[in-house]
Length: 239
Image (cartoon, rainbow, N blue to C red):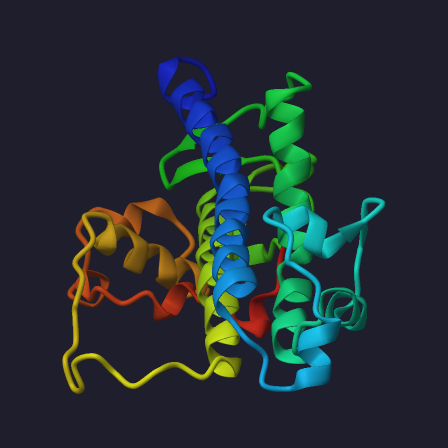
């Protein structure tokens, strides 16, 4: 095991950057949602339309009250949101709070994700470190009694961030009556330069893989440009 040299330090920096970016994604998502909900959506229920309040453009102002996570009922009543939308905010509230805490510690408090260990199976971390201790580590993740594979934790952060975007937008779309299609039957398929890597992370997120070495040559299934595996599914509700 090697925990000296430039490679672990580079990965430490990348992890801290990932936490910072993931935290920012939640506010960018909320800013976009608030923009169309406040300006473009008219509720068909007249009483609900009168009772609705403008959505804030930051995620924290929706899910938190005095640093306490709001319940779905509290979110629904405060902002006049349907229950299906409020429940999705609750689903990702803990994820957001964890990311915000560590983003603030890194950016404002000078904290770090600490040592990254280089092993023959890939990068590992201590499961007792505060940044990683909330994750649901299993025996399959362990390299030995002291360290675990970093890959499942990375996949969880990415998966939960992408899942929040997908599930919240899907929830909003489920209660909005859209106008007729501009071009019926026309479909657009988008390729992403990071699609292969995201699909591979999806397998890790689903628990099919644990160690980095298996990613040396992506399989055909990894090359499928599908992000379904990165949905924030309820059975994997981790921080």
